[in-house]
Amino acid sequence: MIDNVTKLRKVELELLEAFANVCEAHDLKWYVFFGTLLGTMRFDGFLPWDDDIDVAMPERDFTELCAHKEWFDERFFLQTQTDEGFLRFAKLRRNGTCAFDRPLLESLKQGGHHGIPIDIIPLVAQPGAESFHMPMMSSANKKDAVFHRSWFEPASEALFEDIRIRMPAAPRKILRAVYEDWDWPSGAQTCEPSYWFFDTERSYEDYVQRYTGMLEGIEGKKVFLFGAADSLRIWLERYGKRGKVVCTFDNDPGKWGTKAFGVDVRDPKSLPELMDADSRVIIVSLWHQEIGRQLERMGIRDYFVFLDYYYTFDQDGNRIIRPEDEEEMKKPNRPKWLG
Image 1 (cartoon, rainbow, N blue to C red):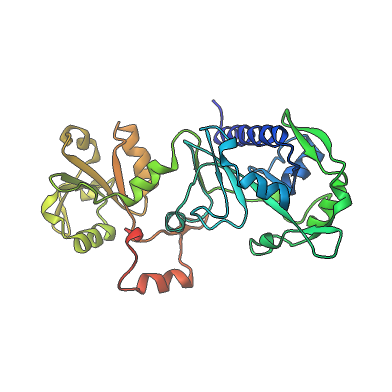
Image 2: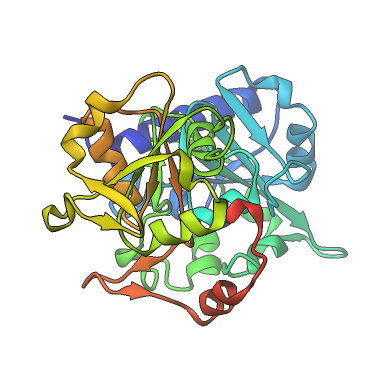
């Protein structure tokens, strides 16, 4: 069985190959960069702890590429700084996939395409100097280093996981400018995954609909909820749909046969036999991902999710609430995209 990171890397290599082919066909200059350059130098491919791909282009070539989205076939989407999504640079994304690198609700609020990407970063010429820099990367918590033009051309060819790539002329100087000690950049060996959630086989559009389309077409539907804790109470109070609710389900056997906030609580095993074409299943629980997988194992893939707010948890299972989260939860009129 192929593990998920291997599947993710396979999609990114497909993106890299498509990008390289378009650049070659239109005589555009580009170079592997950041961890992708370091991985090329060390392993002829991905660093063991890395799961994304970065390339850089001189600004003129970058602008030319962004002006011609039609150069890529229907499998791909070139997301530029003018597209929805508030990008500092460009991304080539694979249609039919999903990758969230921010908390879920933040990603939904951001909008735009959320397919698995590779990053395409412009090298901006410094006025009056023979050098490039990346000012947009300093605002993305990366060092805005200065790179001399002579470090890039003449570029050479190399292999990155069997994909032919363009290697800058002085890769060690570039890596030293980015990482200072490029032999082992500080913290790189404990790099966290780029995407807290990704799916190589299902479009981000499916997830956006699942997390934002809960009330669309709900009239005339029988509603089955899943969850018997405080999120159930909030859902009942917020939307005034109590009359549509048949019951709720919960994985705690101690709650079966009781009522939660006036709603009957049942064993989830009985859900499939109760459903028909006029049913709607809505998860009302912080454990929405785990419950979603549970429903899919039961053959139920058409379900929706209500989130009162998105929380993260530490390694011991304790909820992490940031000060800004507390302020957000106090707001009386929160945006529609929050549920």
